[in-house]
Image (cartoon, rainbow, N blue to C red; front, side):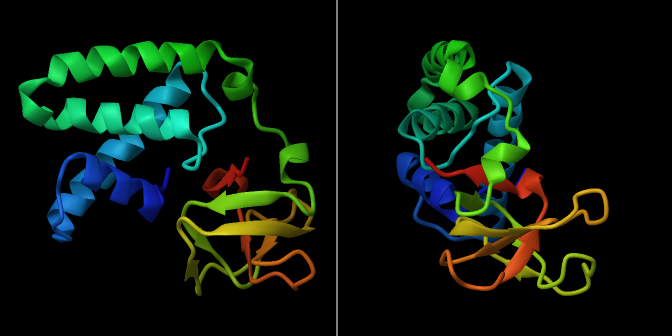
Length: 169
């Protein structure tokens, strides 16, 4: 699952890393992707990179993985406690449904959208962008069936699969 730039920047700040070295940023992204998958494994379905509790959990996870200030175990325990709270909370463990992507809803794009729903040759990177659902196509016919745009009344700027969209609260 893709990770938005804003969450990467939060993790870098928490680790006191100012470098934009591709290897370092790549490792942070890998850790954040593992973080999201770890939450998904315990039943957390609604993982919004704008949610303060998700951001806090991500920071704790990253600090535990980097062994920040030689307190990896302490950060891991804190993360585990927050992860369990998220897993038990109804706001986070309800599965995402097609109704969550109704026209007019705001979403966060976590990866790439496509100018045409059936053509993956051209793509637009919109990771971290907050957009609106403006069109829904037949999901049986198209993999990228959710049309998104910056504003409600605009035509679709691109089409996305639900896997790269998060619900914006």
